[in-house]
Length: 437
View 1 (cartoon, rainbow, N blue to C red):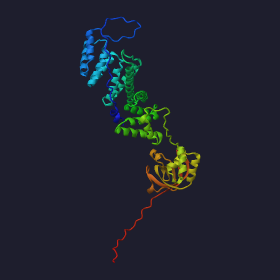
View 2 (cartoon, one colour):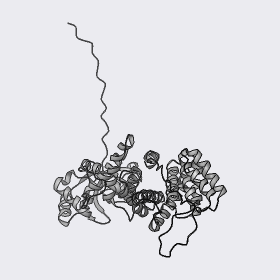
View 3 (cartoon, rainbow, N blue to C red):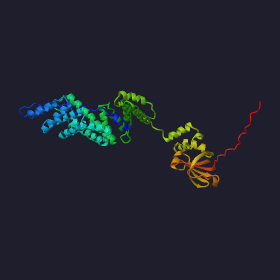
């Protein structure tokens, strides 16, 4: 089911990773700043360089901006504004839809500053999108995750650029953190590192609880078997994913979630309420719980059998369960009804010691395991013409005389063949003519 939804779940790309940066200060006489002065705005001292940069930045057409910035970087490869120019060029290429050039420019930004969070976010998101679309998925998921983890590290030490409003800086950090966590989490999921997937995807979902791809993969990571398995959170987020999904995917996710809920809870009771809750609640509330179904122990099953079914109506496998797993009281009740009473039944031949000693399997589990659970001694030797073969079914009558609880073996004697009576031969009816009236 995972492959069906990968492409469908991909959300719309962030189209403004590379934001317009502030213009540099105009050329001015060089001054020596005081030691305690705050960092100065980047300054281009050469008027020609300044005019070339501003002229490129002020282009409103993306293609024209690409041309202007490429020309500026070629003419001034060591400009103080190199990183800013590359960032803007990355954004301009993105606007023109030139993905190869966008990625290439993002790499150039990182060559200038390995902790440029816009370039890291663009690479993390684009590589993830390519992987989801099926383009070299394994490598692109891995690279997206690497950029995501690097971006999260860089956010810890990132400083607000001069002139950037606090609100814009906070928004950028929030958006890029969501991208970084999502990319790192999806990479972990694809690598089956579910603990890593849970860590990063949970952070991404807490930032953006409407991202279906992250919510869905977070649910699968929680539900994956292993030490990190967390059914409660997994069931909550798979129900949440069902609410976020649209079209055919919605029904398929809900069907999967319902089956996992039923397995955990023991019934479908409460699933509809969970769907209703997760439609408006993005994260598990405090104290969220689902009662886990605990299957009855063999002793409890045996007790229920004894209470609800007559011994004569039980199968051999049910006798075996009570006698081997039941309480002494329940076992005694069944054995007292069986011991010394001739029983007519069918079993499967495991082996034959002699014409009067057979080892049989009466329960399907023991038939499958080719293990004898009945030792039968015949009253008289079986005639050669009627001697059964190994690995065939055998109808007989036998009287239980003893048993061993584990591994279970019932000993029977006074064995006798049960041979089906041959069908009676009847003459066809005589057809008579209708009587004359």
